[in-house]
Length: 434
Image 1: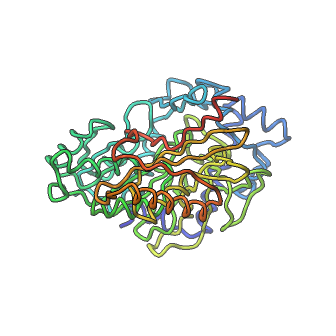
Image 2: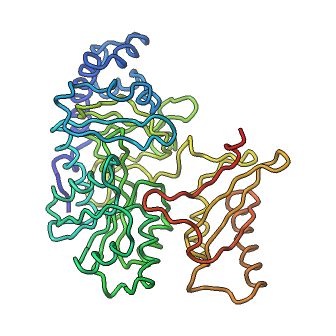
Image 3: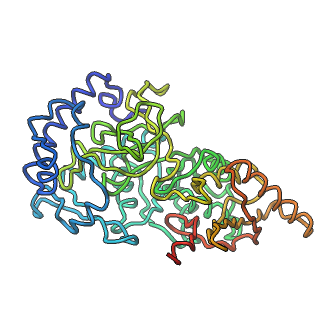
């Protein structure tokens, strides 16, 4: 199924012409209405008239999260507040919150983008969608909610938390789609039996999971545990929220709604544009956003672009699943490490649960890395010797995969704290001592 065939199957030439038209309008709007962008463009000697096509986007300045924080709360808005109909904001756990505002048109475009994404996952008006992303200032819950209503789904706006009630309503209301973080979906699956349910009590068919990086092996794990088809949805509040991109049934990358969000890949250090197939930082320009339009926003997410036509028939550019973030990357004894690499090894081995915690510390001025992993209730070992053998096996697999020695500690099932939102995978105690 395709929601908007005219856009999603548009030729590359037609798409670039549409993007050029929208970029020219966008640059004029931000130059005339946002002091920040007028100053940035004046500093590098760029005027709106210098932007004649989408190819000229590389002339424009980058935008960073710090810019939004420096102009908190409304300094980056391009329209008067009376035209803003909704506000969302990040949690602000690493500094000031980033505030985003939406006009009526922004909300409509958001619903359209989500409708395309959900349709890619095979969702239709026949579905009952349980939205277990958080509602409120976080964009996940309301974003997916509006998209599901645009498609015509019956929406259950349960938000996150209260696992017993999640499972009860999933059973009682006959939910066919679950939307939440992949880690919470795994937690719900693990909680089925202890709450008196089994897969026979559920009608779930599709999962739409996002808001945190997750691996292909995690997809397979979720599909096996739930008996569903699992899809990856991507977005971030600064750009719009969920609905920037989604994968289709071929899982060959996430289709970007590029008539709204123009993607680039740039080198993490030099910030120079990279070609298809090269991994770097993902950058977005919001071509249609009115409330808080952004030029070349550097997400710090690491990905790869692919402009080839997909087997599903869509011609929109695809981005690879996010492997991590350039600024969340751990450097352990000179080795770059992303938590998703740990998850990949554990799920590939299949001898423990997928719940883990990385503990990074420093001893005698040397970095140490400990991995706590929960045992799988269905594969519990019998003796201390068996535990030691499994620990060594995981340690050897980790060393082979990531090139680092890791101390593995096996812990009882359900002892690692669960999250109703983004999973906490790393505790870096080195930061506490700097």
